[in-house]
Length: 78
Image 1 (cartoon, one colour):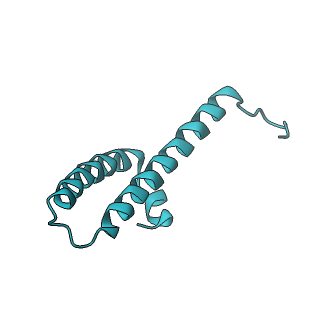
Image 2: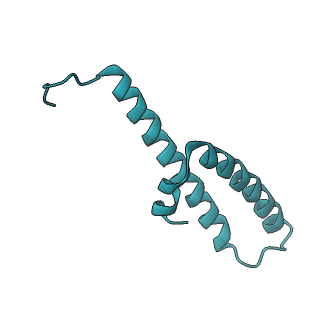
Image 3: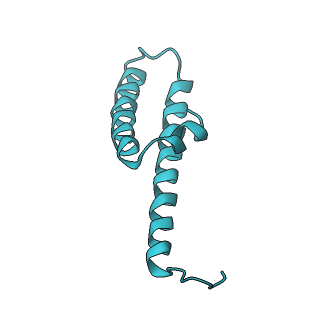
């Protein structure tokens, strides 16, 4: 999954997708332990996708927090 695609999702969609991917990761781990998983690179790919989605969520949360702390008034420069 590309960062651009993740940024286009809403925060609610991201939360749902993270939960789905975490469940998928659990299933992949079981398959790997039972020697049923042929493409082990899928484990790494899913982990990275989850990390990307969590990073985007964290960026959004910190941006919202910073906007609440320092609201700019008219005529004020950064």
